[in-house]
Amino acid sequence: MHHHDIELPPDTDPTVPATARVYDALLGGTANLAVDRAAADVFAQHIPQARECARLNRSALIRGVEYLVRAAGIDQIIDIGCGLPTEQNTHQVAAGLNPEAKVVYVDHDPVVVAHARTLLADDDRAIVIEADLLDPVDLLSRAELRSFLDFERPIALLIVGMIMQISDEQRPDDVIATLMDALPSGSHLLLTSWPDTGESEQAALSAACLATLGNGWIRPIAALERHFQGMAMVPPGLEYIPRWFPEDPDRPVADTAALEPYERTQMAGIARKA
Ligand SMILES: C[S@@+](CC[C@H](N)C(=O)[O-])C[C@H]1O[C@@H](n2cnc3c(N)ncnc32)[C@H](O)[C@@H]1O
Image (cartoon, rainbow, N blue to C red; front, side):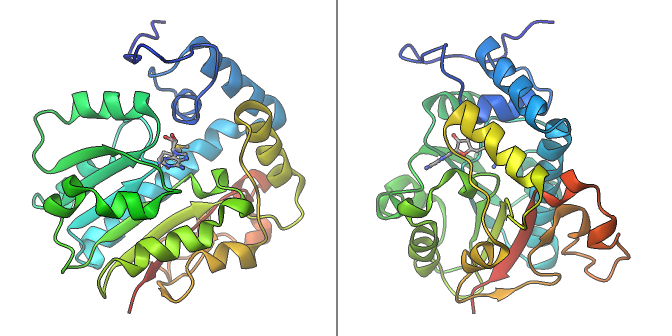
């Protein structure tokens, strides 16, 4: 198999794994290096269903965008920590439901940004910005962002598969609050993260991520709920991903206790700003 589907900026260190590329390897993509595939194998040693976990997170991203565009009428999205393109990226899911929908991708990894820029070169509904979630004031001040989106109309903020990379010391709740404060009424937050309810698979996922990437923390469910502070949760609220269908919250789903343990490693939620 050829793994050449990625262009590396000249100062990239090919001996250090990067989150976006390890996640791409777990999803079966080709935008990764040998060091990333080795890290994906370490994930699988800690938790054999690591690849299923990555796919579950991706399914939450897609279901969330479908809800936001189709049910909530959102046509402007900021996708922070967007990662490398795979199938069914945010702008493609959104455009399939509303061709007018605009997406701003944000990532702090220059490899991700370079790759996305190439892919989006001919697309006038999506742009990519290199910025850090941890400096929300800088992101919000970017002229590209301000001119591309209309900050007078609702915007959906996506922080999917990445807030677990932010430590408590880096104050994820304050960062999210700063971003949501800048968005108008009717804006939404879509977020996925890793709960800690004392289960060994949850600890194993965190251990795998810490071993390979140096971050990746599980948190009590109450801490995950605080990411959405000041906003109203959209039914079914913060839920394990196999039980989370925001467009159909009454759909029959497995009891939490009947899920496989790995299916209880990730939760998703959407909240709406009043
Ligand atoms: C596991 S990927 C998630 C990709 C996509 N959001 C998804 O859920 O399918 C996490 C991404 O977040 C990015 N990231 C991590 N910390 C970040 C930060 N502080 N600011 C911006 N991006 C960050 C990484 O570079 C990576 O591309």
